[in-house]
Length: 203
Image (cartoon, rainbow, N blue to C red):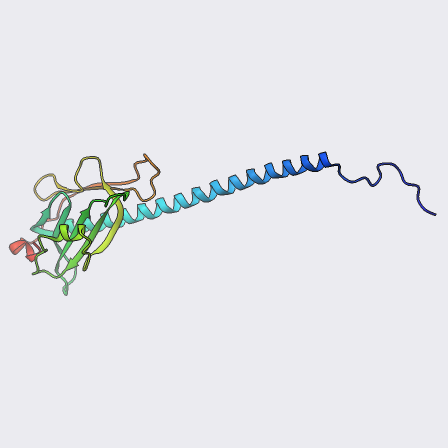
């Protein structure tokens, strides 16, 4: 026997109920999507900040080590240039030349670049190195850290007192608009070392 049909027993959703369901589902999906986008953006920013911090720390540490192990008279400090006659730390490489040059940002770029170079003693750094780098001639140079700016009006390199070098710059690689970014500010004093003959042949 056929079961008697009870009114409303197998009724489907009305159009109004379907519309309400779709609106609620859309709101939930939008909320979840916005949360995921914000989470991914925050993660990318944290990774970029970590990379920027690591890059400036590595560069600053290399500069500080070279200055700390420099010979007496083996330092040349200018606003955008640091040239060092420094101890190599081994019998086969007792002394070497190292240099860092800050090149301001090109038009439209967020920050400038600090280039580095290491070479044997006896070959002075060309006086046109900064201009050559600014013009794009980077042969023999390595990008130490990109997207950096001086701290305020202070130069990247300065000699506070004879032999003590102040290094200060900030990374703008991952800094949101108006944020200070990762800043390095340190003053390094060389240890007592041998006197460099003719600046160690580095400059």
